[in-house]
Image 1: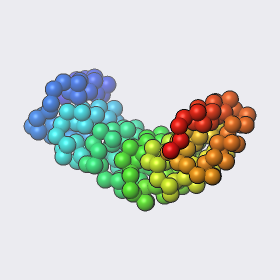
Image 2 (image 1 turned 45 degrees about the horizontal axis):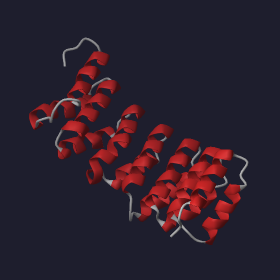
Image 3 (image 1 turned 180 degrees about the horizontal axis):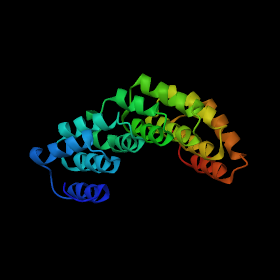
Length: 213
């Protein structure tokens, strides 16, 4: 990468992710960029190119490096790209990102966990904790959505608690209730139908109108 500026180098690397499949010989220099380039924009671009076009094991190696990078932008990008790597990404690494100090990193990690944490008690427990106690409302909302996507009964108490949170989180919690049934769920929907936020009410009305198993 001989471009004169980090922005130009990042653009050149990103273009590789839009081309064809990367051979291992072409991919390894990108792994080195993720590990060591001085500019976070270049590291972000290299990670994206690897996840899109490189062999999964090489992309996974770079992903693990990025997930612990000192720059939040790279950790966030790692969380965003995790679903594309599927089970090549360890759940424990996503749980670590969920606990990240940067809210945007934690938000992206919550979404990623919702995509693939089925059957993981620890992931559900940590999403439930984030949904009910995280200081950032965007993280709480993302964690509630992830719990709804997983549909694990262990996450239901956190979703029910979220039905009393800020309006955006209440709306998300009502949508998440679609994966559950029972008296507590029906009671939460009854409350949502009288919510002072019209979008919460609409979400509850829409859910009630759907056939319930």
